[in-house]
Length: 167
Image 1 (cartoon, rainbow, N blue to C red):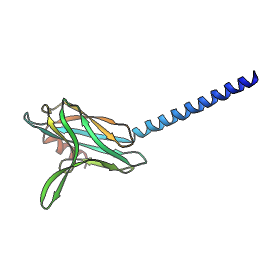
Image 2 (image 1 turned 180 degrees about the horizontal axis):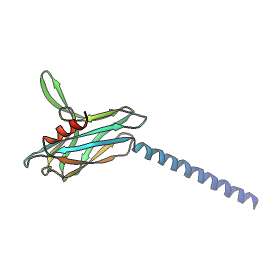
Image 3 (image 1 turned 135 degrees about the horizontal axis):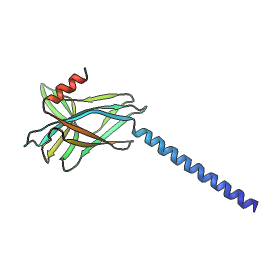
Image 4 (image 1 turned 120 degrees about the vertical axis):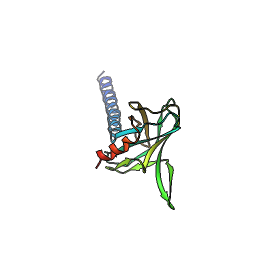
């Protein structure tokens, strides 16, 4: 009987230890998910027939390891597609290219703004109007997805307000 009690006690301790390890790893994963922060997120309002829209925000890696953004998405009721883009100057020509991934080193902040990196929504299903909110889902290589609400600001005012707030 003593042997059975000892075996049961040993089994209970093993289960407790396993549960502790699982909970600890979940807590660490939850901590990682908060290592990325987004701020000043907005889209510029569009006119009624617009088929695309640009979005801007600030992305900061508050963690101690590199973070890789692997993509973004929005509801299909808003647009057919969403991607990160970058405006580049090459041979005196301005063009845009898609950013398939984006790496942020520990402590790094990247400002997505007009004439530089930005979000591009394509195939708009409806115009983006002032006071509207658009949820953007950010996908990461080794972190859980982050959903950020982007407000829609009046066209033209948005860039001026943003630049004023960050100088």
